[in-house]
Amino acid sequence: MIVVLKHGVPQEKKEQLIAWLQNLGLRIHVSDGEFQTVLGLIGDTSQVDMDLVASLEIVSAVKRVSEPFKCCNRKFHPEDMVVDVAGVKIGGGNFVMIAGPCSVENEDQILTVAKAVKAAGAQMLRGGAFKPRTSPYDFPGLKAPGLELLKLARKETGLPFVTEIMNIQDLPLFEDVDMLQVGARNMQNFDLLRELGKINKPILLKRGLANTLKELLMSAEYIMASGNEQVVLCERGIRTFSDYTRNTLDISAVPMLHELTHLPVLVDPSHSTGIARLVPSMSLAGAACGADGLIIEVHNDPIHALCDGAQSLRPEEYAELARKVRAVREAIA
Image (cartoon, rainbow, N blue to C red; front, side, top):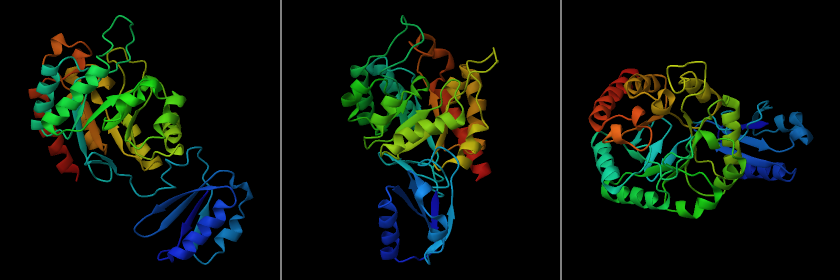
């Protein structure tokens, strides 16, 4: 249920209403917009007399929310969420370019790529230290030493970085990480999501291989219901009948998610295709459809990459793509 307050309601009266609703055992999510304040009522609202609340002088409207996701529902929070990652803003008209290798391999590799993507205009670095791999024989990442190399790259370039966490037990290692990524395979690792809801760090939540948008939003709800509202969603392609690409980029998910939720939405054109030559087209499509940013894999030597070299752009290719993305952004502004 949401309660929309009239414009210019005195703070004292607003607090009195909130206190009364809390006494009914409800949690109240307050969204203060430019022209209205929305109170999101979370919990058992069956005991709330809608007619009584609607009759209050300070109330403009009372509506029931039928969707199971509440915290990440745009009805609860009409204004776009802006997530701040060490000074880099995502959402609310702020477009972010995130780039870097699939896996951190060594110091020379990560520093070379970090400096190159920054020169091309990237605002954040990506890189995997802990890697979930389909085969147990594939490179699993450098783990803790990989995180240290990402911190070194941040020190050298000033780029905040995002990297994937796979296990609750590894959380202490991520204290100095700017943004934690929940990968597609862990999208419904609910114990992990709950724990990430207890920390004060931005979370990048990727859509699962075969998950619906409602399931993605319910996963975001796990994080937000535990107290952390700094969530960014990522459309990274889903498994379909296509046998020519690694996955299928669901480009329609971006405007649909923007309709359903106030959370920022990124597009990952690398995992969605698995083919480097298709990444530029999908990146431009993501920019054109209203995504809040792109997260793209870049490697200085893709042929010898230890992970996902086939979908990684070379630094010079990324620089050219970044120029085209800026042109698209200017065209649709």
